[in-house]
Length: 132
Image (cartoon, rainbow, N blue to C red; front, side):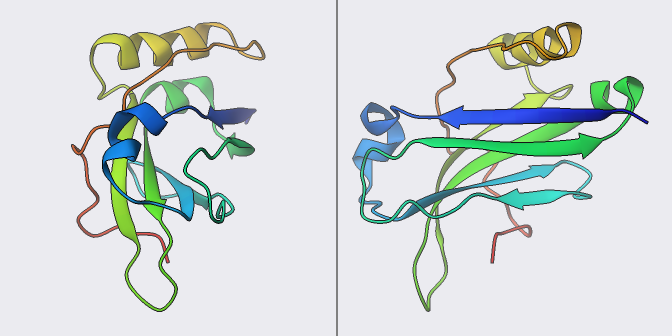
């Protein structure tokens, strides 16, 4: 079984949904649609322009990975309360358009940087799978 590494670099989304909401303590939550693996980034405290550059590894075969979809969501951390969903993006076999193209480019170019920009949407707000 191979190890695939996802390097996630999220930045400069101040002008998107981020700007429309007050969100000072953002973090990212990443899970596969099978809900078998979940990752949460560190909270970027007191910033409206956070940058995330974090790495996650998945031990899967290329065939398994090709059938996956990753949900990447942005949250505002609220101490003692429910975290607020800001927006998200899905990358993988269930995606469409540029998001699906990005996924296929990643599969074809293992070990190489494949960079696309995606706009956060309110679609895919997790109903049951929320970060702690």
